[in-house]
Image (cartoon, rainbow over all chains, first blue to last red; front, side, top):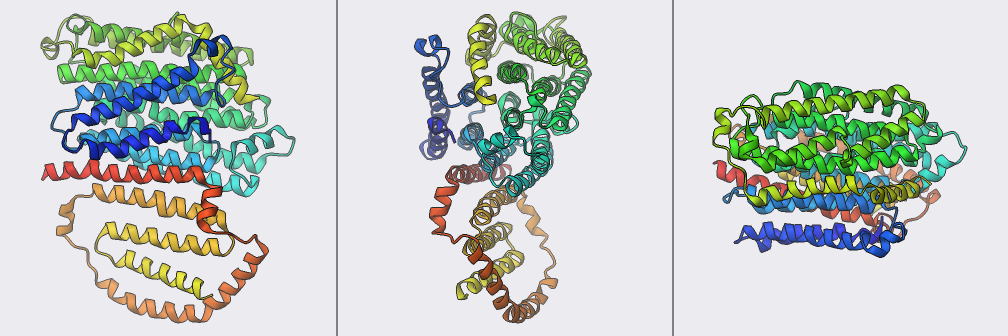
Length: 476
Length: 162
């Protein structure tokens, strides 16, 4: 475990335990404590990574492998957006307000545990903590949709946990250790890796299910659509990415996919990634509910990350890491905006919405920035990550995959344009007539993330040097 | 030998309690205690890795999942109690099991002890847990906190729903 980042697990855990006691008689104190914990964490992370001396030194002073720091920062950023949004979104009389924030902070601690560990069993323990907290968070408002989503989440992800623990057992028997380092050393040698690859394949299958990759995606749209609105942003933005996709990227680098040591696994992962891109994008075209469409879009975008992780070359890993980060930013904006629309107009049915651009201009503009970035339009951040992935595929001779990835990027733009036309442009519908713009605090997280999307696109050379440093450290 | 037999007997008692209890919450806790006893047996027979994983997964994670699931169950289900006639045969089954254990367990434990001598001897279980799997303890702590907050999150809604 990366001890330099241990405080990012301990402090939210401590805050989660303090909140129910401190905020027993003053529920609003729970909002304040949760937000203060996350702001303090982000400020500390910014000091660690964004000091001028660190940037001018090519990020050589970054502790650990650099990936942990980037992902911990992403977790804190998305969690802060969600808790800040929730502070104004959650109803005053909600009986479980303190537990809601405590669960978010425990899940932040669990995600940081997943990211900083270097042992498969510890990874499993933290992934399970994340599953338990996600299950409770999905049912926060106890709507029928939320309970259905949570049950589907439960029935699909807990068998996935069984597969992961079976894989860990096989790895323990064959490798005699569960540390990442030992697997990396073994895969760097010439010893036949058959039984170990089998154990890792079982684990990968579990993580693929937890990620919601096609054909194991059925829980994702129901969970995202039915979940409490800010929780959808939290789940889609970061939780499912850390509980599944992160482990896939980590295993791809440990198994040295790029030198062909586990070619079959690499090939299957790439195929599933491509399938997710295609199925997610085509299904998103047919959706009428905004949140459901965003859920399918999320499946499609995580397909890009899995495709790149399956390829496993340094350039592909750079693309996967960058797209993971980008996905967290643009999907948080889109889901928080869908929550704002739901709060303002009372529905997320796109057939009932229309003409919101005049009454909700900020929500409309931040949606445009996020959707253009998702579709990979330059110079926004999503363009660069997709470019890296497509270039990596082309360089490796996988031209069909590269062309398909490019084509489905155009499909992404098509379904988002349809969404924008239905929801924000055109004539006002009865549901949109009395839909004012939400308050400034509810807009703030979406505006912040949109600014980040633009800034990352424009300052890409700096970010590229960071991501390249990460890829070099985790692969070599 | 007495230590092993005692642990084994305790595991059986907790297991029977888990089956017989009318409260699902108590059943879940008894199941966790069964895992703790099994974990101590594993540890004492020189299998610290199995012991630590049994403690982490079965006594920790699974118990929290059970408690979380139990907290979601509606209380009105208690209005239709289950038929417990079949449980009256349990003392008889217990007696048969005890007689069989009297004959077979000593030999079984002797064999396990000889295998344990071949394996490495363990130190203190707390030390072993701390040395081998320290980050897992943090995960367990997070899991316990998650379990408590799941219950705290669900019960107030239930109370409000009534």
